Length: 161
Image (cartoon, rainbow, N blue to C red; front, side, top):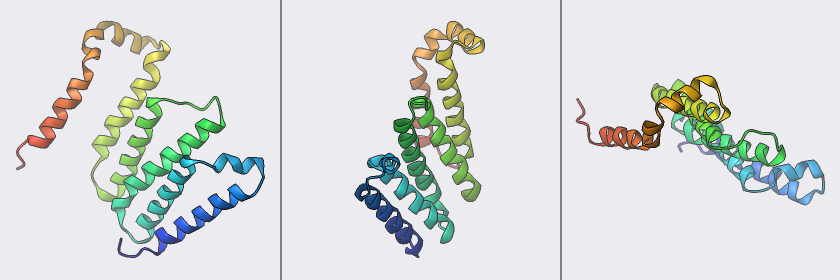
């Protein structure tokens, strides 16, 4: 970090609010206690640093930490809030897509994780299209992680031009 003013400032403000919420006995502020709030504070600080100092390589981790923190806070506060693997894939997709706007790379990964989020969201709810896919490809679906392993190996060991 070249200029740490934004990161430090947002981090101190966030931690101050976090500890102030612990000191006050207002029931609403208890929502913002716990480690998910700390994730969100660190993510907000990284995003502030990324955009104020034009250090856009902090967009992805900042968005990811902020997203995970907010997701976990909302899941703990509202019983009907969507939970599960699909939400984490959705947040990863959004982080890649937000990062790709400034760094001009990563949009493909964003689309891939968005596809995974959609598949995980709708596959267990009996939707006709996904039911047909599950029935027809159930043996292949069992081994889908092997596809991820193959893509990872290709990315690691493919010769660069």
